Length: 421
Image (cartoon, rainbow, N blue to C red; front, side):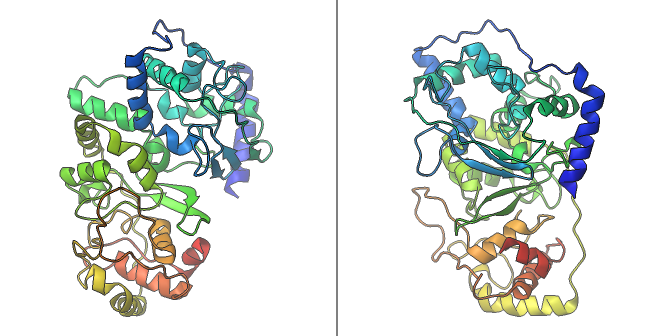
């Protein structure tokens, strides 16, 4: 089992390097953490939007930034913490330096290691000045007294000291360093994507110890999140590199429109990406959106395996199901219609993904669309098919879509569908 193998590797590594690993790092800084600076507060609020802090630190029924959101990981359930200025249950007693150390080094004020569910692996690149602005902003929001929910992490991963070993193996602290060979706009985009927005946290594959794979950065990653029914299921974030089945499918202006409004000529956002756009990217300036697009469109291609092509019998069965249930809105050509349904032919990153989990979720449960305040894009919302189609039928129609027209994404099996139910 992958987690057991990871456990063995972690323990062996611990025996080899634990004696050399300290409990925490610290970066002394001379930046201004002065509370009450209106300019700092406004800047920090913008940065908190760029970092999408509220999506992770606010539950659907909870107080703003008071924590309590559950993250399901292979190692157990970890809950986000209260980052309001409450002195007892939040960060009210944290100094600016202690807040910086949590962002830069992933440590608590008492020196304990934080789990990288809090993406300090990306936030470490945020500048001292921006961390100070975030701190000043968070100190300005209403304090909420809400104790942290206790994590449910299996042994020995509940031993925070082992995170010192993990950091020695997979983590390097330090601010973003600009690439002098690139433009200012490219560097601004890299800073936003890789540091503040921490896009790789969802869009990069991970190894058995939960660390991002740098050799396949932004090629698509798996995680657990809620489907429209409220159940927790596996999702796969699509490939954002310039691979043929990745972000190269969208022109730059379509990427910008998606990040700014949640929709473009190909589709409308759904599922876990709703919060990213509604709580984060739509609040960014046009200049910052354009910078992110410039950087994303320049990412080197990382193409993942397409998988085996379905047999003719599967394609035939899938075509029949598609024509019966899907063709009216998505058209027999898969090109979709501006008011009926999104494009499925060479335009959907979810359709083209190596792992079909997200696509299966949409078929079974229907897409959960955002409350964007915009007029509905589609005439009728897509139905859920979990009660209408069995596992073999869902696998057949998904296989047909993924391998018709200009798509080449591999077969979907009934077992894969069953896992998503």
